[in-house]
Image 1 (spheres, helix red, strand yellow):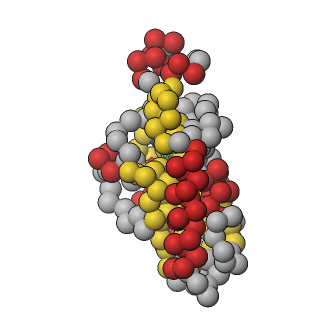
Image 2 (cartoon, rainbow, N blue to C red; image 1 turned 135 degrees about the vertical axis):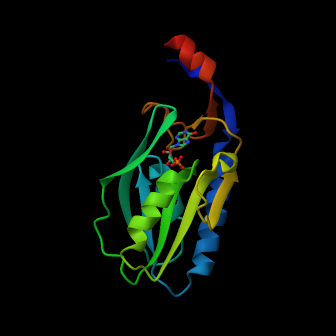
Length: 181
Ligand code: IMP
């Protein structure tokens, strides 16, 4: 599969950098005097998490957990926690960091799992929001960009594990993917 399956940048690397800095500043203000716990969702949030945590001017802890609900383009509807959180978040201020919220099914399930541990607070930070696709309402406190209903890759997001290393976010051309088999 060549890069002709990819549109030109939907969101440029520069725009992402500016936005990540803004979100980091906002979190630094909102959590001033606190010691928040960032929980990134693998693998998609890897790059966003790495950039975001360096824009937060607070003492913090960072962990990753992994859930799986997607197979290629389609959500399977069931969420499996592949790598649980390896830390206690009881009584902690937790920020769940996601690459993209689509149907909301993954986040809803992760929230329920984290909430059961009794955090002092639990907020969501997502780089991308495909709001028109939502099936389950999830309260997202920090959003980078609202995007249309297109499958996107880059900046951590994949199509069949490819394209995570693009420094920008681009739309996938579904027709080109199908034609390539
Ligand atoms: P949800 O459960 O439908 O909200 O899906 C959330 C997860 O699906 C994200 O964390 C991504 O890993 C994946 N996902 C959803 N939309 C896209 C997309 O457009 N490109 C790549 N991955 C996506």
